[in-house]
Length: 156
Image (cartoon, rainbow, N blue to C red; front, side, top):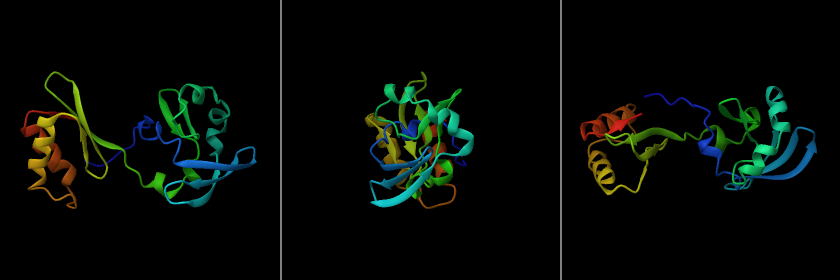
């Protein structure tokens, strides 16, 4: 299962604290720092996203979102994708969503193959699968998906 970003914005909806804007140095340029690492970087709004970046009304309704996130049609886009810090470039958000037979979302699996769920039965199944699947193997995502499906879960 190869990761493919769906541009849903979920990963950055609560990342407003991870990038700190120090100074605006131009209409579309900002001196920033990555809060988790303290690393400074220059954020430049991508030329093809400047129109959507200029509309800040969406941020009023999403105060915890990254300051550089904006909607574009059905997508939620990073407006500094070209100059985003390493923590953003290498982040892989949800690679699997786990549902029960009725279609209720029970948990998600992030890019580092960590299960996030309050459902005890699902967590038990995941832990059992971890006993035989190496997180480092090239096909680990596929193996976990098959294991969960064998337990009767639907995985997307």
